[in-house]
Length: 150
Image 1 (cartoon, helix red, strand yellow):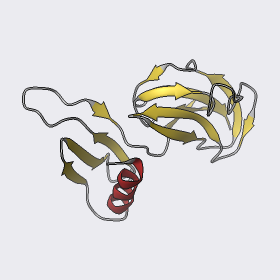
Image 2 (spheres, helix red, strand yellow):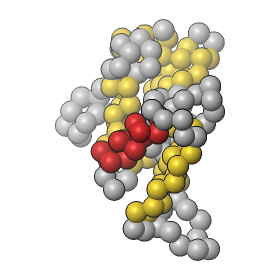
Image 3 (cartoon, one colour):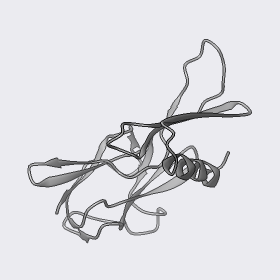
């Protein structure tokens, strides 16, 4: 199952009344689950070979970046588990740097997950105050990545 197929499944679930759906294809099992009625975005997708007695590896589908307000700052968090990259290639300049002004929807970074490059966009307009992770660093689901002053 490729990224576009997963994205289509997310769109279908988002436009329906489903709270959870499980899709199995070959050795992979994907669970799409809403976090709550107040938050209609999908929060987790699990993909791992289906085997008994072996815990499934965690993988979160690309979803809107979760933000948290911290004393007048908005904290942009990782929507997935993966590897954080500041630019699209090693030779390219970083998408953003400290003191850069960003608009809602601007790309902040890329997180690679399962060989897919996921662009993480700003949820608010403002100024980058802090970059909390290093280039090439592994990040966890919901880990703070940036602090933005709106």
